[in-house]
Amino acid sequence: MPDTTAERAALIDGAPAPGVKKTDPIVVADGVQRTFGGVHAVDVDHVEIPRGAITALIGPNGAGKTTFFNLLTGFDKPNHGSWSFDGKPIGGVPAYKVARRGMIRTFQLTKALSMLSVMENMRLGAQEQPGENIARALVPALWRRREQQITERAQDLLARFKLDAKADDFAASLSGGQRKLLEMARALMSDPKMIMLDEPMAGVNPALTQSLLHHILDLKSSGMTVLFVEHDMHVVREIADWVIVMAEGRIVAEGFPDEVMSDQAVIDAYLGSHHDTDLGDLTEEQQAELLDETQAEVEREEDRTDG
Amino acid sequence: MDFSFLLLALGQIISPQTIAYALAALGLAVQFGFTGLLNFGQAGFMAIGGYAFAITTLRLGFPFWLAVLSTLVATTVMALILGIPTLRLRADYLAIVTIAAAEIIRYVVKTPDLIPITGGSDGLNGAAVTFDALNPIPPGSYGFGPLRYDENDLWIILVGWVFVIVVALLVRQLMRSPWGRVIKGIREDEDAVRSLGKNVFSYKMQSLILGGALGGLAAIINIIPTSLQPDNYGTQTTFFLLTIILLGGATTVFGPLVGAIVFWIVLSLADGFLSLAVQYHWLPITTIQQGPVRFIIVGVALMLIVIFRPSGLIGKKREAFFA
Image (cartoon, rainbow over all chains, first blue to last red; front, side):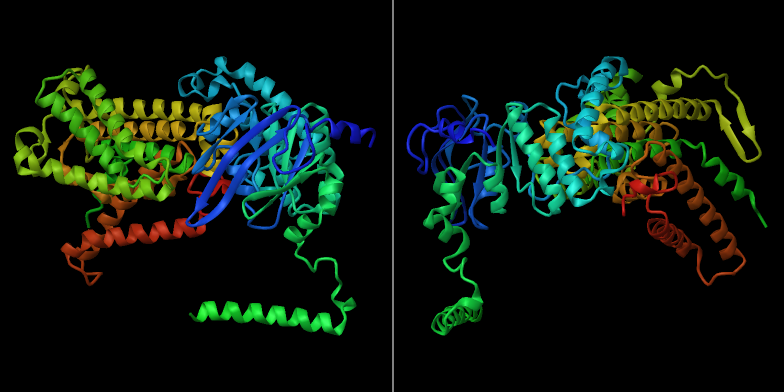
């Protein structure tokens, strides 16, 4: 890819570190904290998401990535903290208003509206349809023209995502991967400034992954900001300009993909310290050590359930 | 053997009671079938609407249109009171609150202290006076055989059916519009709809108000040819309405109409055949047991429908409610 290094270097204003300033941030969050019982699910001091770039949010399961997503998009309320989108504070703003301001999200478990047709799913993503008002809905003359525009845009997007043949089918009839595509296409109906994808590649077959990657890169080239949660490191390495690593609710590292992924702390947090040793290659001593560790863990677990 | 009940059952097709249930069921279909709101208190909306109409007519001397307006106001207020605290929560909360509210209303209006206003357990008679005053049909007896209607019966049947058809067409228009799209989206997954920038709470509230208002108007049609009886608006009525929409098709506009007609015909036929069976000792039951037994028949019929025709009589197979 041409010249990404320079382009990427221009994103930040300082040395890569958790909470580093960005030259042109679209999202700035400060002191965002969310606790469930006694657990700090999210505890982010400061983070900025660069505009017009693809940022990956990675971290082990339970790191608080999805919770952080929910907080930013208004689907959950934090205990403390403030954050802004595009220069305006959006803390405490309800989810639908966040979406109207141009920050659209997708969900980890795909939410295709199964008993609506694919086309209706798409149309629902559009904004400023006067027919969504109950009184005007009764007079088709007031909304038919807008409906026409919406439908044309939906057809374009469906063609781009190769779903046009399915337009009249119920969304329930789509495969898991196609639903991911539909959800992404639907999110684009409103021309958002920023799109937040929660595990866009989960459960998608490898052939489709490639086309999804291209779609995400396309979004960036059309000027959109992308933030996505992903577990597949190849995907992250391939498309992300910037990587934010979360563990136990905190942001533990930030940086360019290649550097972050060779950071020992990140590797340990994310993959565990034995991730790169093949069990067959271990010396007997190491095997015994590992076995002891595992057994100790199992015993602890049993103690807890017995107690 | 007296088979005149067959013709009486036929009369159920156009009876005001059928109209009222069709309209109330249509309201419930808007809430439950299209929006996914579990309103288990449609009978409460009917009661509130019926009492608003009857009390303003009889106690305050309101003209017909003003009394209808007060019904709409009353059901809207009830929808707001029930919806504001519950529509932000999971669906079950609305179900609990509505079923309780409907019972509270029924007990409150029956309170002896309120007899000067609500008529207590006896209900209210004569609320039809303003409606009958508008009747242009000349006095007389219309119909054939055992199906005889006087001019006032005919008047409410005509107005009622025209009104139900007009409302059904309006609801159909709504459901085919972008508004209906949002509503159906909410039924499928409200978080997804929220993430697309729609004010889900407001749409659910609109749906609750619309459905409740149809319930209130249905009660007016129900009380005009007879009287307002508080016990006609117990939980049983709500479950009749749910039966009707599942029978006709919960996600259709004309399903509730078809469902209401079929429901009352079946109930009436079951009643007729059972009386014969009891009279000629074909069945080992008494006249007293006959009433409950016909509901057993209806219950079994409902189970068969949900099992073998989950989308209702006129629903599309793919939009089945119990898929």
